[in-house]
Image 1 (cartoon, helix red, strand yellow):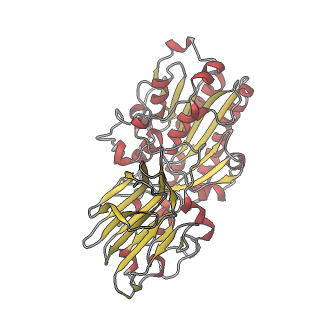
Image 2 (cartoon, one colour):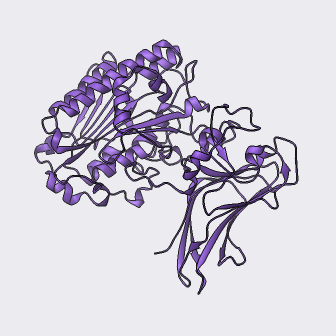
Image 3 (cartoon, rainbow, N blue to C red):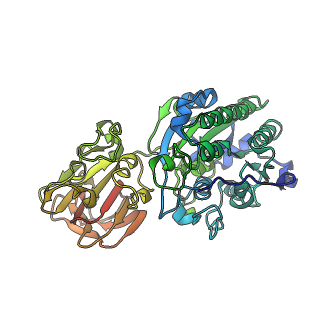
Length: 510
């Protein structure tokens, strides 16, 4: 996309709802109404507060290469999570979809923002996280300040107490000063700040340019000013701050974004908070987690009816596949994936197996049978075949990719089955099978989910013979009387067709 014009307003575009600020919740009242998500090793007397800082178009790799002491200090004090986003046809890697995903906590297939015009958005159904704060706890003060006016004019709703679209003449300098003033003189519960100049430098000079690095230096100093304002608050010792720094998309070395390269799809989260391990790195974090984490920190339970895609970073939920990250290796036959990327293994997690007894021979080694891989590795095997739309898998996931397997001489067909451990069940009752899936179809391909009780004959419980977008599946299983264990099987068969992704597989009983 082309560089966005700066907002040109004669004065602050500000929306206030300050008349009800005369009554703020006490720390004790916050504790009483916080709900279960707030009780994460937090001292009862400390008041939870959130600061989200968005660095438009910033690349984590460039931040790490630059002299950015304030961002480095945040990484040392908390969590660093490199991540990736979608590409077309889900949405292009543009600011409208990117910021909407971060701010609402759902992916573009829900909020429906596909460009920077926000045409057809569904913010009434999936509002911004500050609006959710105001709805759940209207006594809390919320504030959004942005150098790019569409965020504070369109994405954040009028329910937010203060929305400031910084005049273009002031740009990030004005945004920073106004944020510092709010953090210093006010008592906000949640603040969102967007800085735009890194993206501007990327469009004008490219992400490999010294000007892009200079823009990171400037933004780093501005982040430092905001963090210092938080830490200088007279009430800071009685406050419990979650600070998150993130980006809406990346940039190419030559400059620009909107496409499907990993550089354009790259984003990240840097977060410091009471339950986040200093100096930790995680790979299971996704963009919608920013909104979910902010709400959880403020003690607002995440209502399933909201249909959020995000989950709180304070409550990691790794699955069996994520344990395979230390076993991931570099490419074997693939040529488009950078040689330094460690991203696949055929070794299943403990208790899991892969049955390739009916699998053809030869083909591309990486994709022979079910493979455990990452977004960074799999999407670079072949871009623009919708692999980038696999947004709801996290960390390491399982993929059966007949399309890529047949890119080298082979015999037979793709026929591979991923088999779960024998999970304990109670006979005569219902069990719930959940998993994240993404299935792209072309006949004669087929995906089957089967269950075998006490290692008996597998029974088909789900069949895929048409495209299924990235989503979480929930299947209710009726466990036969007397059954003690259940194994789940995911069988993929096909020729030179497409692929099937499975992740976060769980079998539970209540």
